[in-house]
Image (cartoon, rainbow, N blue to C red; front, side, top):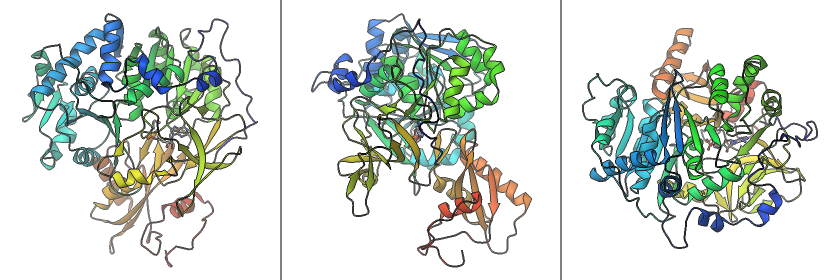
Length: 593
Ligand code: WT7
């Protein structure tokens, strides 16, 4: 993707705060960056050098002690009915689940996985697991059985919390293949239906547990969170974060999302991905802020109603969602009033300048782009409340994080690009608290992400003379669709299981709303003819195995996929051919393909 707008085309949005503005938490970026120290942030959370740190202690026990009766979470269901939890109610519910896990001997050393939507049980499980020193690992509930199986196999998770419906459709068919999975808790959608055999009733177990629990005194470097991200080859990567990550969640929510104590905050991300955990769960609670949780999926009218009715003041969302709202035009947005809405931010994929400007038109506020990744655990580049916004730019480096652009030469040496406007890979100097600890069971791959003392992100960007970063594209074949990273390899493996398929190649096709859509190009086994029925059957096969979120939307047939002489499928060439782009360097192409 090279849709970087001319940097001078859009005027910077300098005066986007009204006269009644709340002053930003960080009112001067340069001064804050010069005086920034992670240790000082840790001290705000009660961390003492050499002492214990537990995410649940910092993000839940601490605010629950300070403001026990304050509203922590408000869930809104499809009929706009609300369910509220104060900080102390949430703390006690998490304690019950921590007690349940302890009784099952699933505390320290265990991994507790969720396959849930945005519901209270998700929070009870996450913080209950963290409290007893287990690792919390969320899965995306739109995954089909195959991605769920491969991730549970990699994590070796012994506890899963899911709903009765997901259990029947997605877990029961693969459970026999997961010998490590000892306990499955089921949140019952329908309490009159029988509990599936071999599962525990979440509500019944919670009801029988005491609500006090001593949060485990874990150390800052102990494992706490396991997220999955996609690789171009091989299995999904398990990204491990330590308890110290909470220091970065807290600092970035305050300084980059401008969270103030009296905010009503809404993060629209799914909890199955890192944004939903870092900024949908941990960060706002650590800041002692009230969080709105929508149990439903995106709906234009519903979202405007929620923003107005719930008086949301800080809203963290994604470019795909914003473009869906933009598509519906200005009329629905103007049917409501948003006097409380003060700060809008976005993450996950390139935020086009039009979307930033649309924020101005629709709400009188620009959209503040932020950049980070599963591996970084927290925001690394951001447009800050007190700084000008240049539409199309991802913003400035976060205080306390050293960001640079670099070229990695084949001999392993690194060239840092210091002069402005040169294109290089975004690299980060290790040392921020939410830096990942490893890729689970793949230390080699972890070590390969570092060179010359820098972490290499796999994203290309340029930086202007003011220090603002502009996204250029990824350095690999991984697809970004609706903010989710999708591994072409994982989709190909599922398609290749179909009896008619010889080989397949999966690529991302540009899309104006969701950035990219997944498309497969399939080479059939000899003697099998392409037909519209087979195409439909393959699409259904993909959806069944992978789930709608990552299955290919479109399939083409080809007599022979282009390969390198060493047999690797050239996805880049396929993409160029499909889109009618220049084919580039073909020196490694095997003749005849
Ligand atoms: C990849 C990371 C960040 C948490 C959610 C996704 C892309 C992220 C931006 C942005 C352009 C962006 C990058 C990055 N990305 N933010 N502001 N502009 N691209 O985490 O699934 O690990 O994805 O998302 O390619 O590497 P993730």
